[in-house]
Image 1 (cartoon, chains in turn orange, red):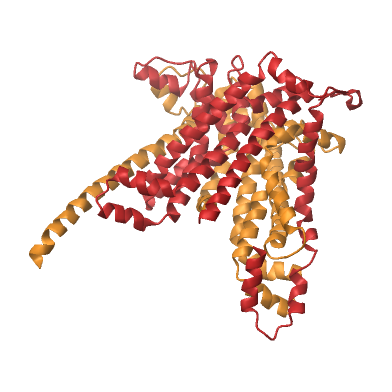
Image 2 (image 1 turned 90 degrees about the vertical axis):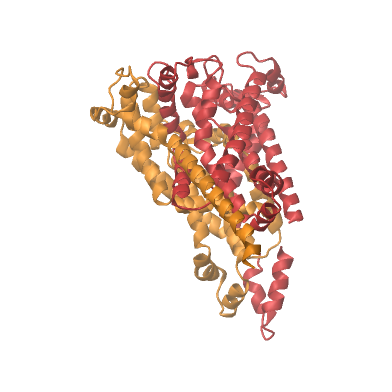
Length: 290
Length: 315
């Protein structure tokens, strides 16, 4: 018995040793690559703390010299608090609107049955085909006609419906046991009641994923607000940053400081919720199969 | 789908339930009302405007006085092929250059990284976060950081090349290297997201097949090529399609990293739409460019939907 097993065991041990060596190697590689991806972050922070034109050696550009004045200069150059407030307001309102429209439409497509449902859902999917670069010309004209240029409205309402959001809510509803709704109907619940007290608690994970995606997309958008607004009173922070870069493009330390303090909030938001971002994207890919 | 629900419900509903009562709440034309807010937004800001773009593209559009616009038929489209600087064809080529590099480079790199990071654990989890972090940053902000990295006088890229006694480059100031520089930045920004998509694909493939292949003595490469890779085909297609669509639309990094220059070296179709419509105010011509961009994007989306359906049929 033992003699029979021995070669097998020995083989397995050497296999295990080889496997653990490979694990160690791939871990090291992963750490190195992860750090490489972080180098630009480190570099922009260092640049924001150095003085301009002082970069003659590698150590000069890779070590900070603690010139906090760069931050004061950058902060004084634009109405940053206003711009941040605008971004938060626009992103927050867009999220609320997108959640409401996705929940209602997702409920209708996933739970309700009505004539024309397939047609309307096809229309929603067709929207995916239109890139925002195509829309920028006609939507600018429309915004001009309805006097929405230079307002919060043009930055919120057009992004207040999300194909991804509707699709996700619908998928969640389709995945729920239909007896849930049967029971609610037996209790005499109306549609809104059914959506609010039965559906809503069940689709909460989907709503979180939608909220995160819409929030980040709104915060990071540039072309749209850049074309649609001129007035810093309603402009988001990224447009303000681009304007600052256009004017003070050569003051790299101050520009880097502005890059740092405008990016830290959104990056912090990501880091706190990174688990949800990553599982959200992963589930999107896992769903590709079916 | 509706039939499916119908059947399931038929099996589950207790017999004593009066079907009429159950029917009323969910089976109702009120569905139109529930979808109305979303569909209204789509109609006003996406579907209508897309049709309007076709309309505008047949005019010599007068920005200051719309009533003065002149119908020119397909003139804006024929102008695509004889317009001077930068020509439509050269911009289309640069869009293809950028998108091709993003699709091929991005897919290969992110697949390799996903395979490296697919095992769990704290170290690999932290590496995933590090790779994904660039994707969470605004393109305006981080492309500015990379402009500084690529600066030929003070930048990190040339400083490192000098340290290793390698030939330096003008990067964004060189017509040859400007596009590769933007591609490097864009890969840095996008790859984390596609890595996670591949990780999602790897998480749902069956481990048994790989184990069986290992038992049969397949080495790591054979196992990847014959077992893992075929199972990742759906996710790969998804990654290829969304990367092509998003790279065709890319604008911000081109605006920030060189305003389409030097000498139009980074003027892609999307950038040209912006430039014609909002810098040169040739709105009709810009609309014609937008229509071309729309047709290309729609083709990619339909391709994705068709392959998606095929996958659903197979599964």
